[in-house]
Image 1 (spheres, rainbow, N blue to C red):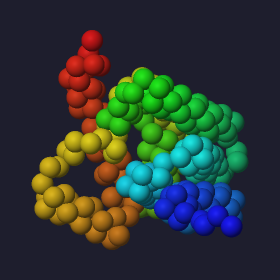
Image 2 (image 1 turned 180 degrees about the vertical axis):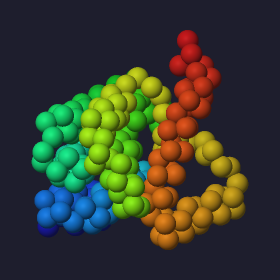
Image 3 (image 1 turned 120 degrees about the vertical axis):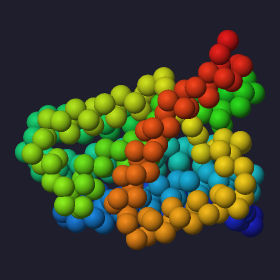
Length: 244
């Protein structure tokens, strides 16, 4: 009997754990437990980061892992947040809301398919795909469309009185998923913060903020990400192979 290689198995286990949290998010959304539904999506996001980092660290990247990762991302960051927003903000009573959530889910699927195609192309041509994403990643898109719901947890219920605006916002974020705008990748080899001590301090501050002020921290981090997009475009233009 062939011995199981846990080095290869472990990243896939984390990916499947993220998938379970995505499925749990849908369950909690259907049960109107919206806080837990968002928390499950956030934990799925952590799993999504960890599985890739672990696979690269252990040098156990595989075609199976890549396919599992895409399927898990589609469910956790496409289907789950779309259902959650529709169930919570639009409350099953808005045609434009249903349309916007469907657009987000479909564009999430397209985004992941395009990412896989670009990844395979870069592998075939021996290019380095790790510095930038093209468009915003699906986990970031999921967090961005959930911001109006997080505002209600902080006592700001504006979203329920502006359904058309929220629907337009969701469609805009959906468009960013499949846009050609370059955005920073967390996989990039050159760290923005080069000092390990500074990185540890920033990481600790962010972790403490998320633990104590979850919804506010999510909004601040999401806003900071949006502000980083112009800088990512400028950085992308400075790369010689991109500017030619």
